[in-house]
Structure formats: C-alpha cells, structure tokens
Length: 411
Image 1 (cartoon, rainbow, N blue to C red):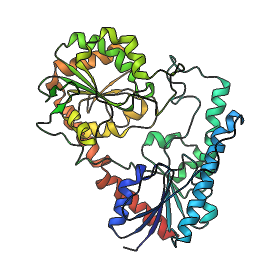
Image 2 (image 1 turned 135 degrees about the vertical axis):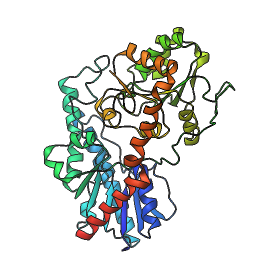
Image 3 (image 1 turned 90 degrees about the vertical axis):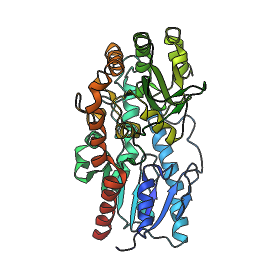
Image 4 (image 1 turned 90 degrees about the horizontal axis):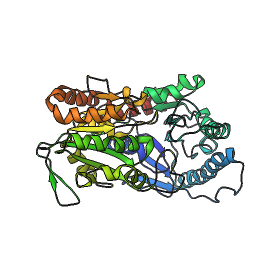
C-alpha cells in the first residue's frame, strides 16, 4: 500500500472524519489537518488551527453575511495551509467539509491536489426544512433570498471538487444536476460494536432511581432540544401517553440550552422551558427525566432499556443517534419524512408517523408499551439494516479509503 499524505479539513476536526483519520494512520499514511479554534488534537496528526483576522462587517447586506464569514474563514485556512507547507507537508489528497468556507482558497495553495468534499446539505428555500413547519416558519421573499445566497460559497467550493461524498441518497438528491456526476454516496457510519444492546443494562437517573428495562421506558435523543428534531411534537404527545401508561417512564437526552439547527425562539426562551410551560402542568414530571448531555456509554445504556425510541426530524441531515438506536435494536418510532424513510420502512424495521399527527405518535408509544412482543422482529430488523450498510469500520471507512486511493492514483 503506497504511503499517502492526506490533508483533512474540518472546522471542528475531526468531526465526521475521525474514523477515517484513524484508519489512514493505521495503514501508515501521513495525516495533517486544518481546523478552527474548536478543532481537537489527535495523536499522530499535525493540526493547524486557523484564526479569523476580523469579524463580519457590521451592517453588511443581509444576503452577503454568510459569504463574508466563509471567506474570512477561508483566508485563515489558507494561512494554516501555508504553515503546513512550511513544515514540509505536501498533500496527495484533501478530504474536507466545505460548509464553513475553509476550502475556498485551498486550490490556490495546493493547485494540483484533488479534493474530496463532504456534501452535507445544499440549501433550498422551499421544500426542505425552512418552510416545513407552518407553526414557526413564515417564508418571505427576503428569507428565501437569504437561504439561496447561503449556497454561493459552497458552490464555489464544489467547483473545485474532484468528488463530492454524500452520506445519504436524500442529501445527494439535494445537489443541483450539474454536480450529480461528481457524487458518491458513502455514509461515514457508526460503531455498531459499541452501539449494541446490552443485556442487563441499568440507567441511573438524576433523582437516584434506577431503570433496568423491566418497566416501560420511552427514549428521545437530540443534540439539543429543538423543533427541527421534533422536540415540540414529542412533548405535546407525552400528556396523553403518560396518562394512558401510568407505569411508563420517559428519558430525554440532549443539551437543554441553545439550538443546533433551525432558529431559536424569538423571545430568547429555551425550547425545554417553552414546552414545559405549554404542557408541564399535564405531565407527571416524576416520570419525565431530562439527563442533559451524557457520555456515549450512558446513552447506549438508555437505548438498551428502551421500549420505544422516538426520532423525529424535519427534512434535514440525518442524526447519528438514529443509526445507533437501530444498532441497539430499539423499536424506532420515527417521523414519516424523507431522511427517516431512507432507513426505516414502516412495519418492517420500525414505525413511521406523520410528523404533525400528535395523536398518532401518542398511539404508537402506547402500543410500544402495551404490545412489546409485537415489535420483536422489527427490533432485530433495525440492527440488521444498520450493520451491513452503516457500520463505519465495515463499510463507511473502507469505502472512503478506496475513494482516496482511487483519486490519488488518478493524480
């Protein structure tokens, strides 16, 4: 196997590329990285962190805010690339996430180096997340133009791409026809040896109680609790569910402050506080447990004792947590939205409900508690879906390495 020099670029290195970087190092390749101020160090990898020379210009035209920010980051990344060059690192291949602009000037620094770019999301003003939920989204010409303008710099990045790697068919289908010939669909995968149902798992709760799965548990996981991931729908379904199943417990895992996707509430209120103000007086809060952000091992314990795992999302990027829940043989109760349908087939390896049909979600959770044996085959089918197609070490990383070698050889 030839010794390759691979430059990985990700604002929050390693991000999606952690397993890929480790596999490259394991086979003897040289790996360097460019990342932003939040990038982490990795043993064996020379990480050059960029810094912004300025902030965005106050009062700049609203459609240009994203482009200016991306170009500021691109300039910092270009300087970081020059630092790597001065230290003698000359890449054979660049693997990068272009969403924050860092790749925009890399062709200037490394003119002949092929670029493999991660195709996470191509923005659309209509038909994606921004106009999905009429309760909160009120599209206007101004918002449509701002969203469309967010594609300006990512299209410049893709113009320099030799290949664009999209994790799912849904994400690949969002890119314009002009870019389709460049796309390869490779999901980076999850570790299904770590994400695996643990017999005898016990989850300790903040109030000192312990859940072992002998009584019904419904789980819900977000990076942060927010509407784009259906937190408001889930909370609205809980009062009737808890009333119908007095023996059931509910476990929610995720950050309670801020938002990762979608907009914050206009009054600055947190989504948890907003939903508790709306439905809290109808909930038995002694049975609703907010665990905050937890270690991965504790999340697997929660999934191992789950009788039903709720995963809802707008049409948007799919979460790793869905894959890990399926790998843990959870009964998936998912939203009938395009990203989820790519993995979950209703009645075969999970249950799908209309995103906005709150009684349907309540009924699905009640049935998960009342008829657990009816879903035994679905649970096993969920893991059987993930292991052969979405395991990082078995499929995702080997496919990435093959692509890196293929592109490097063409050079």
